[in-house]
Length: 401
Ligand code: G3I
Image 1 (tube, rainbow, N blue to C red):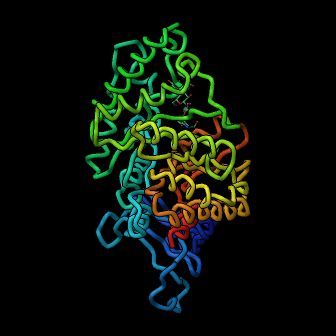
Image 2 (cartoon, rainbow, N blue to C red):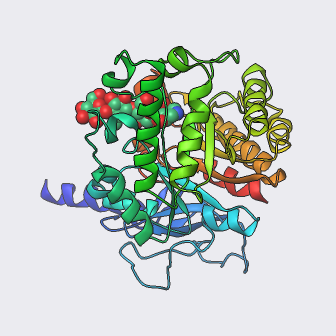
Image 3 (cartoon, protein in one colour):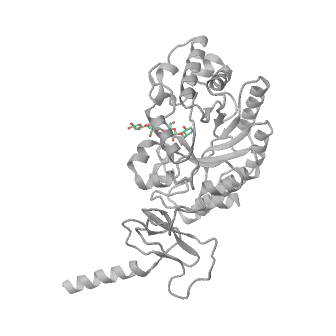
């Protein structure tokens, strides 16, 4: 009996020790005991100390060896410079094509609690820009009037600076995640103007030198969204916030951003008209943020034309919250479509010089906001739940090529 068990165990181990890993599979990392070589045309690449992955060998320099393995392998626990973090990460590829950055949204509680996750988020080769997913929003910074909480934002700024990454502020004036003292405060127009000015000034002064933006002024049909700001002040709240922001930090890039303004349409036209009016009124505005919360297989075909209409207003543009979700479960076909969709978005940004950079809204499916809001949907990001790169990652790279 014992012999039998030992024999069975040995059989089970043999394939693990010699089998080639398939496309996108893990092939190394601390604690990994599986195969460390990849199928033909794929190469085992170091991602971080905890994860090496079979990725497409886009630059084969030598023909595959005649041995059973056609790919190089990476020792699972290697931390040496012979297997350095990828030299061609997303940020590097974007910069090589004249863009300023590829960024990701994140938060300190994830970075502090998940070392493998933090290793990728802090990799300057992958991400040159960090956005606070929630910790700079109104409900996080001024939950009670005049009582400020900067801990989350400050820690993230310091973390990004330590990594050599830039930081994108998010956000000054937004109808969501707004504390009730603002949304139900019953302020007069003058008092609410002062509340906006004070919040914007304090926030931007704190993070002087960073990019800040205000957000989501429109409904999907291009009419102005009803919020305490619009109801009390009409559209003037936008100019109020932008003027206060410019005064607090003349060097900060001021963006206005929204979702569903990716392709041409009523909402994009409304954004273009708003920005044209702001410029005509000498209100400071530097950029339009296209959030880019998209759906696999349904990415608009006229992205570039839309980006060009924004650029023609004399502002820069950025894709500020990119994710492309699918109906679960994940299938190879959906992943292939998602790759094509990411490529399409990136190619449109690449084609328009005014498009300065792209931020993904989290980089891994592990922490995406999507499943919590859209039931049965998810897998929207270029890294999966296990921090493995998906085909979407290559789609981004190919979009820049
Ligand atoms: O921190 C609390 C936690 O204490 C509590 O136990 C838990 C229970 O639900 O909630 C936690 O707060 C959540 C927060 O994310 C942090 O995880 C909020 O409920 C949740 O509403 C909040 O969602 C954020 C959402 O904005 C709010 O509108 C998402 O993380 C964030 O990704 C999402 O980001 C927005 C952009 O700011 C603007 N554009 C759209 C984008 C997606 O909705």
